Amino acid sequence: MTSADGDGRANGGVVSRLRRIIAEGGLRGLASLAARWGTKWSLWPPHLVTACCGVEVGHLFGPAYDAERYGALPMPAARHSNLLLIEGTITMKMAKFVKWVYEQMPEPKFVIAMGACAIKGGVFYGSYHMVPASNVVPVDTYVAGCPPTPEALLKAIEDVQRRRVESL
Amino acid sequence: MVAAVFFPGLITMGLYLILAVWAERKLAAKVQWRYGPLYVSEKLGGVLQTVADLLKLAFSELVVPSYTNRALFAALPAVVFFVEALPLLFIPGGPGLVMIPSGYGLLYVVAIILISTPAVVAMAWAEADKFTFIGLLRELLLEAAYEVPLVLSLLAMALVYGTDLSTYAQGLPGIAVNPVAFFVYLVATAMATSRFPFEIPDADAEIVLGPYTEYGSSLFLLAYGSNYVKLYAMALLGALVFLGGWAPLAGIAGIAVYILKASALTAFWLLLRAVYPRMRIDQALRLGWRELLFLSAAAVGVSALWRLW
Amino acid sequence: MVGAIAFLVLLAAGLALLYAVPKLFAPRAKTKPKELRFEAGNPPYGRLRRRMVIQYIRYVLAAASFEALASLALVAYSTAQQDLVTPLALTAVVAGVMAAVGGDVWSHD
Image 1 (spheres, each protein chain N blue to C red):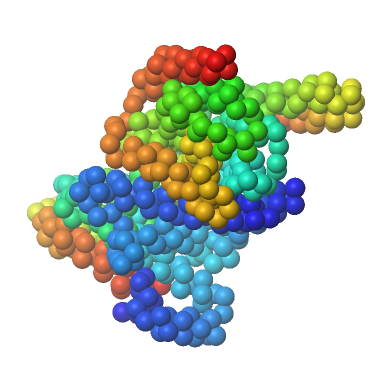
Image 2: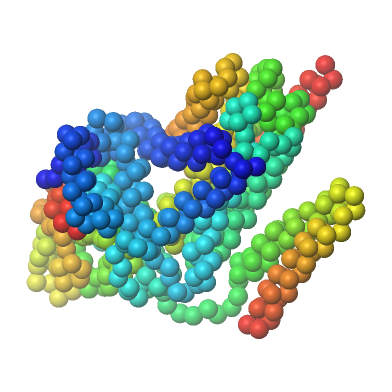
């Protein structure tokens, strides 16, 4: 975990870190720092419900779990979003559209594959018409469960923030 | 120069954009028993959320698709933003603190506010997809609903105080002179800036994001942010015309009072998001052409009575 | 007036910055779906069969903006001691743009 983490833990630390980044990477280093910080706290998933896990995603943005605390905001379209939540089963037919939505999202973008079906097939394991998420799009984080609880999803969002965005 | 850079110009406008979006999300969250944006800066209640969103959008890929006119597609969000910011040229932020002092300030402001709808329509047309076309039509229809009441409510105030905006801070505040006009202004502005019961052009549950559907990255920032610039101009105008602007004080304290009044108006408009469902377009048009039109005519009548008396 | 010009210039500079930042710093990856219109997650299919009313909205837009220019010319003529320069210049702008648009439409249809 790095020290420039939103609320500026030690002021001197942040300033000296900024100075080091500018000395090392110049303007580009500063831009990358700003981009990483902004992306970390602003992961917007598009509206793409492929299966029953969508109900849990509904919970995720509801009063009890409230993923908006982490800066996640559900968006209606692929063009404004940067976090693809794959909500459960992907059939062959749906995989085409998952890929389409993923490719329409602007860079940088991240993928969370949710539920047993998206990982390996779940109750549909071995079915002729079923694809694991990793065969369709590059997945950053998996969430286990059938369905996964909203807490697990919050954890996955945190995981994307800490592990993936920081290493951009 | 102070007016251009500090208030009502760029710095206050930028701060307003950041704080208004954050306040909108926070207010809606409070009403829905949530926290809203929080962990981005936990001690400050997540007030940096909009800054993070802004950086995220500005540093993400700028997609200018090739199926439409690329130059228009890329340029029109900036044009819309620019046009929405133009009323600030004529709105004074204090005695003498105005970019273009004019005896016809109110007229210029009204004209510019009404020009901005064609700019949004042009933007939606340049995007050229189903959802933006529907959003475009709804934007036009909604303008048909609010334009006449909005102009009449400001006309009612002009009948009493004239068209020079800097005279509005003297004497009684407009809300005491003509409460009907103030009410009409509140509702008509909610329509003009697509606040909630009238969030019809960019209804995200129905037509993706209406006129903003195709934009990502900083184009989305410009296109969607322009709505809040309009809200800023309308809040300043409303606070000046109906609440007396900087009235009891002057100088820096006057500016603070003025900002406080504009923020109160803004908070009202933002809270609408949490407490109202969305109207259908026919309901909004009926409201505009029946209740609102009669009320605004009555407001002009009230002002005429003031003049006679 | 200096304030107004400063405001407009600074605003334009800020807006230009918002175009420059993603151009310079954002990662880029060209894909086919990004080039096509958004169809709620579906690949667009089929081709345009006939023109709809909405596609003529450009005429309404042109009318709305040029109407304003034309009336501005009228106001300028009647208020500024029958000054001929401003109305003629505005009319020339209207006529020029109209001719360009008309030529463009004619060359396509």
